[in-house]
Length: 512
Image 1 (cartoon, rainbow, N blue to C red):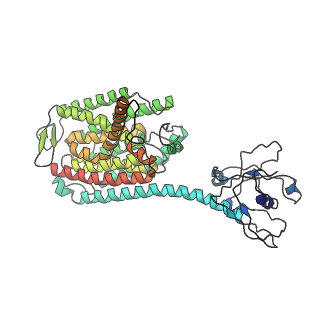
Image 2 (image 1 turned 180 degrees about the vertical axis):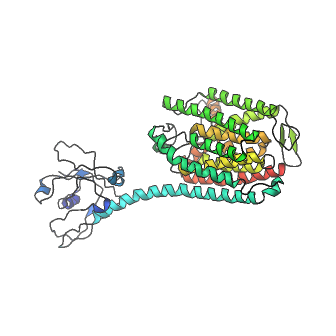
Image 3 (image 1 turned 45 degrees about the vertical axis):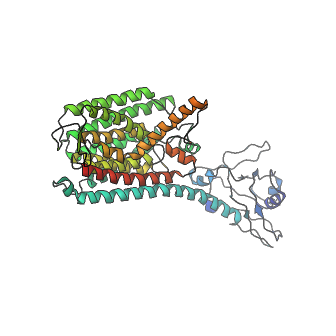
């Protein structure tokens, strides 16, 4: 019985049979069975149809009593890509109109004309087979294209960071005025990147088996619904690797690196608690906002007091100093230094957390910020420079799995830890100005959220109805809703962060 078919298509299909073997054949074996000869001097067209092919019209020509279902354009064609993965059972004829779960999907984007046939049999590998091939390759091509964009971003980022680190290592003796080991910053960067990348091939499938999947905001962009269920908590493996590599290379003898590592792990624990509660509640938010803020401020305050009471290596005879470019020089903040440190821990941790909304965005910009900070703190604490290079390498290694289209997200356990590590580097050396410069993307993203909330509340109070400054906050979601593709947004953020990292490193060097 034919349904929803035009008269031309009914005439064509009345002479065509579709053979489906019990097992799914590869696309190259999908064929149209030979048909009795007929005379026609006009092309046959497949106009996008949906129906079942069955009935006595096929049995009288000697075809097998099996059915292939043909669907119209606009429906999912994923089954074409998955033929080699599972068994295919032919659909039994039924008069009740039941549909099988195992169907052959044909979704041409445009009408495909069949060849003109004159006094000959319809060739076996003809327009129908070609259509199926093209449709399958079209879907695979889009997937490869998506992967290609993320790979290009990663290659560009890695090339820039490698060239910058090699240049800094080459002229490091002029910066520090002390002999340093060859590839002083390049070595921790490469070791962490390789270890994290390899660890991801073990941890990502493990997290997927444990069904630790991300929960996507319902109010977020509609495109993000496809990311639901992607494994999260990637910070569980790349944060510890970055810390351990730095500790091993400095010989576990640096008090600054130990302090930075400790506060990084504590913030990672706060993020882990938040992620676990999110999974339990099956909601995007785990810890309440006020509880998380109190925990972050408390940890930042404790680190400030530890910094004030601990003897750390510094080229200055006094603590609580902030180096600034000439003519400002060294600025003594006193107790204000402690408040600044606590505020930065809270704000930067949440800034990276807000930025972590696109594949590869937070990881790549964080890697650039770490390199900028490593260059800035190199004259003051070379051990912390190693720590920053190691954390940057861990971020780059994580990007091999987090690039578009991401197979894992870092989660709060990763984003909060990265923010804490950056602030720890600045607070132990006084390099807050380079921190603000290198983290410009995070600051802008956090400010966009604050502006959105302020503008909405203000217009609601004045006009009775709230209005939004952006289509959605943070700003990268606004760009998405404006039609900018996700990899393009990430690439633009990388370019801006690269410039900011260079400028931050320069400011740090002329300030030290």
